[in-house]
Amino acid sequence: QVQLVESGGGLVQAGDSLRLSCAASGRTVSNLPVGWFRQASGKEREFVATSRWIGGYAYTQYYGGSVKGRFTISRDDSKNTVFLQMNMLKPEDTAVYYCAASSRGLIQSSISKSENYDYWGQGTQVTVSS
Image (cartoon, rainbow, N blue to C red; front, side):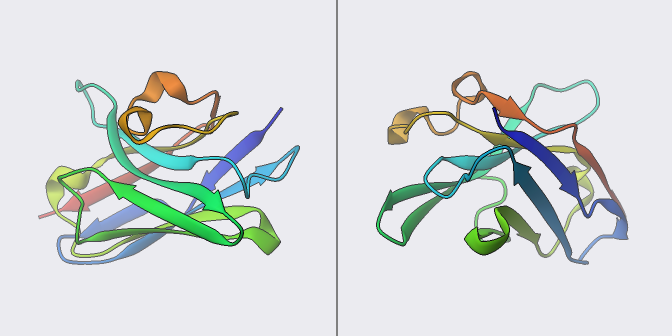
């Protein structure tokens, strides 16, 4: 079992930056796909980013179209933690952000589908004012 705890959300202005953290416990997540999804009020859950282990110390990152170029996902395996650096925030980025991990490797076409992730955090609210 993997437990995930998000932190770092808050209220910011458009153009600001935030860094979200996802601390994992229960087992190492260094070789598991770990990502971020978000859900705005009244909308469906949306894929944000995932970091996928590809062997050794190498990872590859995937991003949703609306955040590509502004958000960066990274890991600190020594802390069993995954980060989401969010820059140039926009009001439309307002949502609850969830960290998620899959118990198995995922092929590229499965990365963005929430049903392929087995472990979820409780979420952290990000609000961006205009």
